[in-house]
Length: 105
Ligand SMILES: [Zn+2]
Image 1 (cartoon, rainbow, N blue to C red):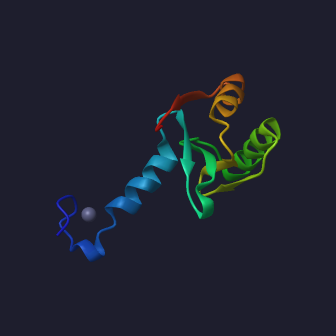
Image 2: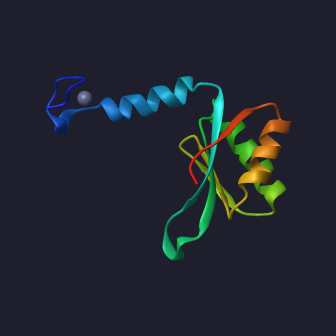
Image 3: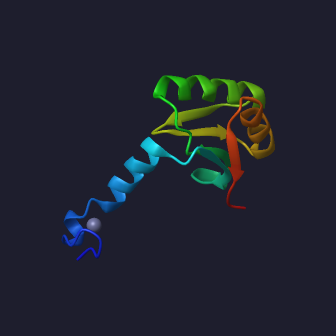
């Protein structure tokens, strides 16, 4: 049983709800991290917490990819740029007026 909503765990929607709320509200601070995942453990630079509409997020993703000279994806409110570009991504976001925070390793 989930302690928050008191529903059986199989019916608990808390995690999904929380993600949805975080995405909608955010706290105005974008979180930039370097993650390795998928085949070969290649690094990707991940930006989360941007309170932007999907089309704005797509456009920003394009600018970040261009700035890093790299490919990437924009999906579910998260921008991913292939490669380790944390410094560059933070610099671009700051220049565009976003508040950014580095998270993770
Ligand atoms: Zn729950």
